[in-house]
Amino acid sequence: MAKYALCIGINNYPGTQNDLSGCVNDAKDWASELKGRGFEVEQLLDAQATKAAMVEGMRAVIGKAKYGDAVVITYSGHGTWEVDENGDEPDKRDEALCPYDLASGPLIDDELYELFGDRERGVRLLVVADSCHSGTVARFFREEAEPRRVKFLAPEDYPQNRARLPRMRLIERAPARGRSRGGALLLAGCQDTEYSYDASFRGRPNGAFTRVALDELQKLKKDANYSAWFKAIQGRLPSTAYPQTPNMVATSSQKKWPVLESLKATD
Image 1 (cartoon, rainbow, N blue to C red):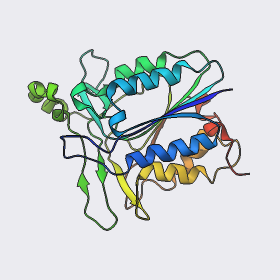
Image 2: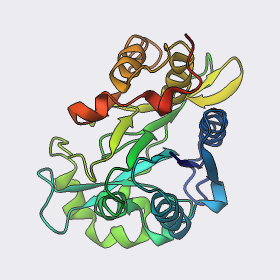
Image 3: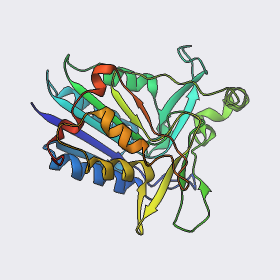
Image 4: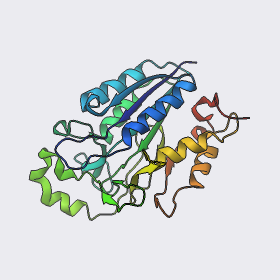
């Protein structure tokens, strides 16, 4: 069995005044963990993580996998939403990831659906998103003992959306009811109606979800499954400091997959 991974982290969003601090560390930390578990890992950090590069990177890592192989894609950065133009979303929003080059537009869930679905039968695909998946979810920057500052990348930050602002203002008042796309096992940092946090742990920036997920991963027994990992994460989030509720979207069989193939778990 072969194992492939792509780790994406974006701190720098030029021209937005909404830079983050822990996302590149998140990507590097996931990459280190995955390499230790035998994954062949590629990284896209800051300016490398253009929309075209993210699409090509995902396509390449998924395309290499054959029946029985494992693929992990991690993303840490801003999220946003776009107006749903094809009517497949009940809340009229397409959830989206924000690449470094905002002028190229966000990477919406319809595009991710196509990318994730274009894989061979029997390939296990895990997507870890320490970010938002709808317009009601944001990232914050929070220094220890410092005030919180909102870091949500609003849809109007994309130039192509400015002509549609009146329509978007109406849509953003609707309850967020996004749907899972693409058949991947998804671990997300928060619920649709919550915030994810860009945090600091012992003076080092990290996403709160990433830090908790990796810390709890080290405590798992050998061959633990995703249900066990997610339960351990839920034991620490939400917390008083980080009131975000992680989410897992998976089939019953996906929940039983061995976590990251469990090669480094403790006995």
